[in-house]
Image (tube, rainbow, N blue to C red; front, side, top):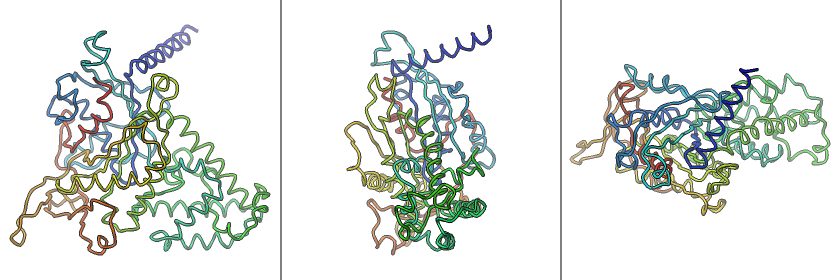
Length: 476
């Protein structure tokens, strides 16, 4: 009994500390997500690395608390949510610091990390109470596919099927998807369901999603848990598919279909997925975030073609519809936190020459603000920035046909060779037909530059601006 009482007391103390930190604005829950291959693991690793190693060789001129000499130290501390996997920072940093260095393995589910940051307060009420203060930063890493599932909460099974079928019938999905569409078309929707057939079709649909993401580099992948199932692997809740024949069936027959029919079971599993998977994530995690960064790789879709870029645009539009916005008053921070700062970061800025960074930001701005009319922007602070969480190239000039051209030098990921390349120009606005015809952009994947030490800061581009935007106002 004494042990139980002690555990309860410790939990109450933890809750009291969390409440105190929220009351004096000393706690941030930062959500980090990214669309396909945007470098999320590298970003979190570099962010933590900069905070922990600040003061060694940090390049954090735009992070005010560091620039003003008020930053003391940061360290990792035990996370609050013990049932959530820990972000494997040491494993990721080991990869970047190996010989030769390599990119860390991407994460496949949700994970968390807590940082305690000590600093000297300057302008806030805290300076009257203490010489030093601590900001607790909870970082939650989750797949972009999970974020793209949130719009499903507002869809019926019929609406989701029609939307998904429309995508599957368009390039570049259609050639690979047509075989599955034909198989679904051949099924009687009101016949007694064959669960093995349904499982086989769901497996084929899942393989399609993997192909869309990994081979075509597409952004819109639904449902997200199909390719990142975790503990739900092989569960019936992940064995449904979009129905392709709603235009051919009677609405009343559909509404009255029993759960033992093909169409009825599809509908039932879709609803179950929404409630037990998507809504559960929303209630347990998403509504508690008060800062969010969304990482987007705009460069690879530019290199792949108009279909891939259009899919990136659609994915960002879906993301913009998913957030719960609103300024975090004291009351809302204590009882109903909402995202009050949202940062969109165009990653891999080191893969284009520095004079193209402005165009990269402008392009992302156009992608983000396409859906501005859908949201209330008066209650949220938004920013777009071009970053490289881990800088992999060196910029310079090279003489070509009598002209000096901006070039990049780095280690090509595909064959580990050091190359010098002119990557071309990034459009400052949404690309038109002439951009795709000219094919003036040459994206190349680069590997990390050189081996590093765990006690050194990783090279980066504008990570200090990210830190200032997301953390700076809480460290005054």
